[in-house]
Image (cartoon, rainbow over all chains, first blue to last red):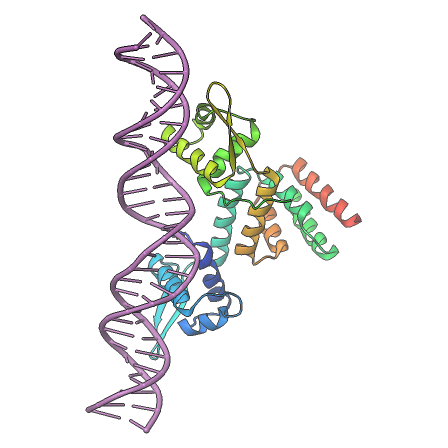
Length: 126
Length: 126
DNA sequence: GACAAATGACTACATCTGTAATATTTTATC
DNA sequence: GATAAAATATTACAGATGTAGTCATTTGTC
């Protein structure tokens, strides 16, 4: 029973990432976590949270004191879905040229290159 | 003198891709090229073209007969820019996890895997 | 308990997008 | 040249997004 992933807008990603990384948080925690990273007014962040709640991407926990918010959708699932639609749009769905471009552009350490090669080796085995 | 790239919306990408692939085209050529791929009414496609012209992503060529349209921005530049902002947003700017996800998700032929490995090998040499 | 401060709810508003319809201007045809 | 057909331009309109402000309510403080 996979649930439909709500569409997460660009700015909203910042909020989701905070929530995915640090469990449930109050609105203020989120504002604090984001301050320094972004230039939004606290109000703006509150609005983003509300919209995410309305979309079902974030759920509200009625803790005694103040609301706590936590992600209601799975991070990996969102990342994969977003990645798929990105590749679809920009690379017409053909992964390989996309990957080639990425790989060529990326500034990778030897270690990272090895990790990636390992992934490829594993795929070859399949 | 690198020009600012206009933001190209999702639907607009389809039009740009047609123009990048097949040189200058009339509005009708674009509509024909897209029919089958998308379900948009010709009007809709015309609108997308107009918006792209207004944004400066497409330029109009006054050929004697009818307008011809051609891309006014560089394809690779757009792809790179879009990729950068995507990786920034979804992967917080860190390429390697992005690549790992791509590689794991991608359905690659043995040949493609080899090609990618070659790219990695070459990078390792740098 | 009264009042200020913090929190959350509701409202705002311009721009962008998706998705076209209608109106006007060219061009082709008779 | 009048008219139809085709192309282009103008207008529409709802929902999403970026970016908040204001109003109402809850809570902490004295």
